[in-house]
Image 1 (cartoon, one colour):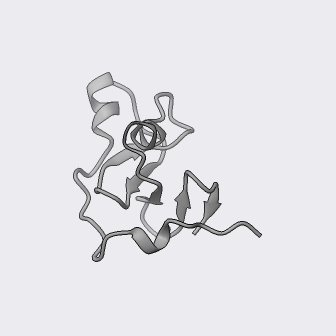
Image 2: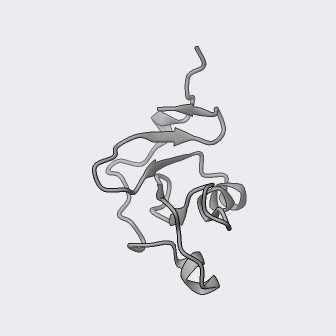
Length: 86
């Protein structure tokens, strides 16, 4: 089973969210489907089911490897680099 090699580098404590929604979607006039928060900096973006995929775009621009769901009642995290739940 593949393991994430990036968890140990996450900042402690977890960063605070920089917004309550995907600002990229707001600027583009689209609706985010699901929200994700970058665990490197707190950027909030929409998931890959949204038309503009801002969370993945943030990872591609910054290289920040791990995000978590920003949906109420959910607690999973995903490593973009290792393609695994962490």
